[in-house]
Image 1 (tube, rainbow, N blue to C red):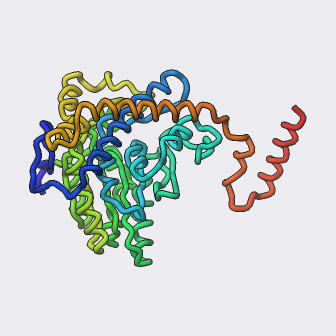
Image 2 (image 1 turned 90 degrees about the vertical axis):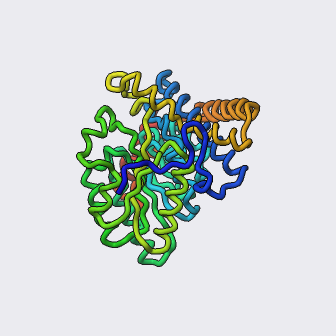
Image 3 (image 1 turned 180 degrees about the vertical axis):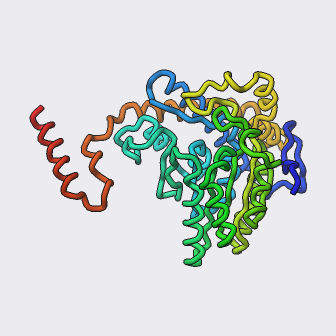
Length: 359
């Protein structure tokens, strides 16, 4: 296989016409707006953490095209298994800003009731599975769901996100091998952002690429420009169609760059040089897509100004709402643990209620 990157849009906004996809003007504009929303939310999320208003934050600065382009290739009935940066995929699937901010603030309307780390949420109504802090655990889960769908002859595809660091975990190899043996309808989507916290990709593998690893498990690996939303969509859509035809899994290596910190606990200036960051900023996926839309006469400076203003207002409103909602009631510690609450939890719940009554 080649290590060359598949791309449709160049950093200049120029494009390969024969590789363009049949996406309407309105949809292209919507996808761009979602990318801008993710970027704005990323900036505000880190600010909220620095201000002490939320406890933790994980951003996705620079990886917007990977998430939105890949999730757009799925059907609503397909399942997404995120890592912890896939806010773009969640928003595209229909998760609302209010739901996201409620989870950030861990308030009473948080679907996880304050039990999960920020950015690790699941929304059953849109088949978006709850993320997990341990690395790569979502891969075997995605393969298992895909195998179940295959057995039931349900035309469902699962897409699982992970970073290049996850390819050093046992669960990566377990998931890949199982998918290859049973030809499950699974898309393995690796966002190679070059850094697993402070560990560079060069220290992660001796292989020339991540995509080449698929060959050992008997299926196709493809390497694409992860900062090109149309290349991401095109490649993922082809993989999804192949999987739905019963032709097995695909590993997609989307080469991108994490332009912000790993999390709010990280200082990337300790291991990323200014020169390297500046080089990747020239390939910014949002700037690239905007240039493309402008060349196609689908976007203007007035559109940009209005969109930025609208998005900032939407985020402000969601933050204000999330902060007004109180914390989850202590009683929620005992709910959703078992289908039927066992005696010892019932006893502890009564003790809690009695203690509160005596206050």
